[in-house]
Image (tube, rainbow, N blue to C red; front, side, top):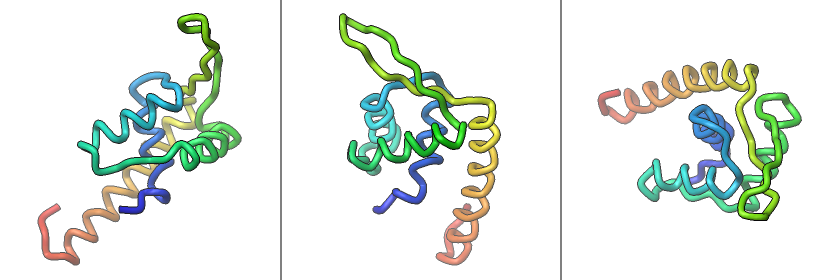
Length: 104
């Protein structure tokens, strides 16, 4: 399933539970979707940079185990955008379920 269009929402949701570095974001999406939603690193980082440019997330660096790691965290604007996109997704998925004859 192609999740590119929904990836910003998924990233914002993962970051709503706390700061993460890129690899952990990928791992969390795959794990929380029970392996259904896999994301390639090459897809993730341009979206992270766009979310950062838009002020929805911010990056910071920490040294962990002697290695410098870049982490991302949700901003206040990101929290508002997450709420907006979540509501939009719920309306969309409910409409699709109605169309397909399933329950929401």
